[in-house]
Every structure is written in C-alpha cells, then in structure tokens.
Image (cartoon, rainbow, N blue to C red; front, side, top):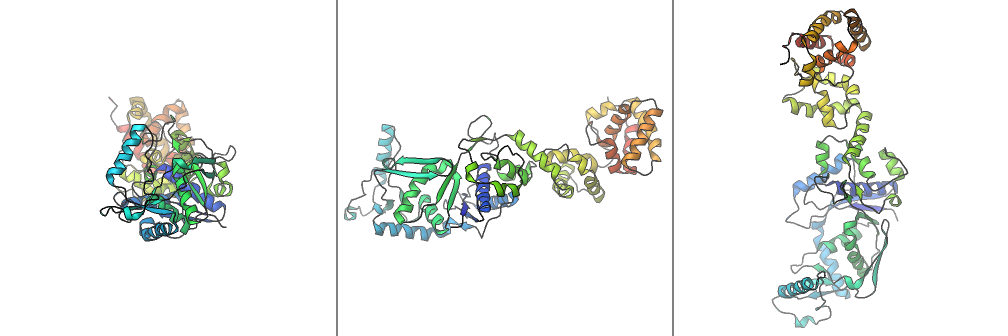
Length: 471
C-alpha cells in the first residue's frame, strides 16, 4: 500500500513551531516514500475555530514550502459521516446509549477527585436496559471498550507501548445533541482518507489507545503510529513564547528564510549522522522515522540564527533585495527609488556576509538607500574629528579624477592619498567609512564607494567634511 500521511491542525490559533515541525515530518515521510500527504483542518470546535486561523495555518504552510496533495479536508463538514459510524457501532453492539444525568456525572467526578484518581465513567449504562432510561435525558453514545487485557501500540518512534484496558473508560462518541466527538471524528477521517501512517506529537499518545479501540470495533485496519517527542525550551522546560513558541508568521517577520526554518525544524529531533546543513532534496532522500529520537529536543535561537545566516549567504541576491525592500521602506517611511534598489542589488554580496536574519540585513543595508545628508551614528561621528574632516575634504580632490570608478581604482587612489598625506590607511579609511555608511561597520569601504557611485560618494564625503564637529 502506498504511504498516505496527514497534517491535521485545529484552527484555534496560529501555526505554532511544533505544529510546523509535525507538518514537515509528515511531508518528508510521504515524499521520501513516494506517497501522499493530506491536509485536514480539524474545525469541530466551532466556538474557537476561526477563518483567520485557517488562513494563517495555510499561509504558514505555503511560506514554509510544504505543498499538500489535493484540497484541504474540513472535519466539521463530515459530521454526518462520523455520526453514521457511531450508529453502526451501536447496531453491532460495540457502543451503547448512556442516560447518565449531569448530577450523576458530577458525583463520579467528585468521587474520583476525593480518591485522588482520574475521572473515569463507571459503565453504569453499559449493560442496562434502555427501557429504564429517564424520559428527560438525551443520551450520549459511548464506546463499549474492552475492560480487561491490554491495548498495545507498536509505535515507530516510542517502540512498543502498552496500557491496561481497565485504565480506559467507555468514552463518548456522540454527544447528547448527536454531534460527534473529536476522538471519533479523527478515527473516521483517518480511515476514510486511507491514512497509512499517523505522525504526530507524543502528547497524543494517550488518545491513540482509545482510537485503536474504535478501529478494532469497526474491523478497520489500524494505521502505523509515530509519536514525536515535543520541543522544549533551552532550559528543558515546556516550550513557551519566551522560548520561541511563536507562530510561523512571527519567524517570517523576524527575518528567517523558509529553507533555514525547514532545515532547523528537521534537525529538532531527527538526525542523519553529523549533517547539519541539509537541503530539501537531501532531506527527502534521507528522511525516515528511524532517525527520530525519543527525547524532547531543545529550541535554540543561536543555532537557528547561524543556520539562517548560512542560507542568507547562499541566497540569490535579487531574491534578498525583494525580501529586504519592504523592511527598508518601513524603516524609511517612504519608497526606495530605482537608484537605491540598484545599489542594494550591487551591494548585496557584501551585505549578506554579515547578516543572520533579514532584519539584520535590512539594518545593514539602510545606508545604501538613505537620502543625503546621511545620518551618522555616535560612534561614527566620534571618528570625524576636525583633522579627519579636513583630510576628507582633501580626499575629494584625489577621488574626483578616479577612472574607471571601480573597487581597484578607488582603493589605489585612497592608498595613494594616505601615502601623500603621511597617514596610515586606517586614519583615512575609518573616517571615510563614517562618511559613506554613517557607522563604524559596513562592507569593505572601497566596495561601498564603488556601489554608491562617484557622485554619491563624493557628495557624502563632502557632507561629512563640512559637518560640524561632534559635541
């Protein structure tokens, strides 16, 4: 049978980082085995499921580059099918009607609390004649679960996992109003979608034991299960917002590239030898569940930053310009003109060497697209002493006649000027950097001058030479 996996988020919020990793693992497993991966939106919680959340999940998956086979399947739209299966289980004797009153259920909960044990339905309507049912109670439909023995799951990650059936009660399949519960809906959908492999977080492991009982009651094939350990923060605690439990769109806004986030999520709990930089093509070739560890992985922003820096350096310059322009325009408060865009493209090779995120790249690139006079930060202004400004003024004449205006000719002219002035190169290069970039850090200053062009370079030097000394 061909592999079919699914990613089944609940649209009650954004696509968080743990969900993104689950989606990635399902996608890679299906692609590795030449199978299909389906998207199911589990929107049965009508009060909390929202259209903006669905849109955010789909947009996040698209941004990550995860494509799914076929259109999304919406769970709520299949409620009639879920209820039909429950009625089949009633007819076959694998389910029964329970007429417990709210007071009886409250009493069970209170007793369990007093005895210090989890609440479990006591089965009082399991074999009771429905003729005894109170007339004013709309019954729920419960699974007639096995009461002895064990339910065993051969998990592809966790290994063999067992639970005594006495620990599992007769769960509700249909509520009193006839609507199906999540546990029933998931099983019916997975069966009807012909899911062969359920890959999800290990917080669902307890659900699996109950869901297996539904499969067996219906005589359906049970899929393979793989429960992935959750992601923790760097301190080993449950992942929270302070650790990085954010929506995928937040990582996009912070300036991470989708291929970097895919690579990072892949390495959170899965390994292929000592490989760290893994392309999508390699991931598809190598990924399988035997590489998933059993221990929780720890989210580390420093590692993500380093990985993102690698992918920024490898990215196409034109693509980076397109990514950075909106960030620059937000900082500037106005559009970047064609000249500024051309400078960005020309200078991108030097800019991207220093950046770990697109936000850093935008900060570093800002000086290329600012209008004159260029703002100069405090550290750079401190370099523009009276002597330095006078030297810059004299350097304008040395640079005016440079031909051709390229890195080699500019560097030759500046070195010649420094020698003629009896200056060390740094004594003119550092003030020159302050004048052209407005800061003490930038790509190579001769490269910067070449990118800015003759007129802009001479103009910025002239502005700095004539500026007042810093206080």
